[in-house]
Length: 142
Image (cartoon, rainbow, N blue to C red; front, side, top):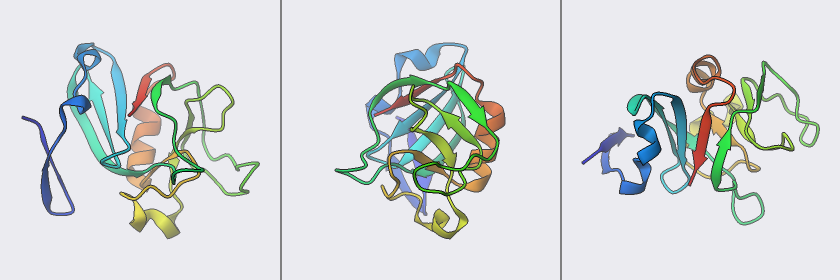
């Protein structure tokens, strides 16, 4: 049974975190809103695992579903919130939902659902994912 170690606590991963699609040879990302984690898989094998911060419910809940990385931007500024979103990877057609680096001032809050709908990543995870996950890669949010 898969397990994960975060903040010094060992947790058993729920079965739904492991998908049949993870058996493919492609690189994918799976976000768990319940666990506030993201796992990156390469050909079904774990390549990276990290804490995230998804949307703060109910108003800013991160949508669940199957998405793909549509495009990337190095360091865009949100037109709504006027903040930088380094290592931006859009996953939703309007370009309003994506993966990006959390502001350094809130990075210590990863693991809690506090974003406005995006999936916030820590600096090292965001930078790594930006180069590792190709445009077109599947991103599942559950």
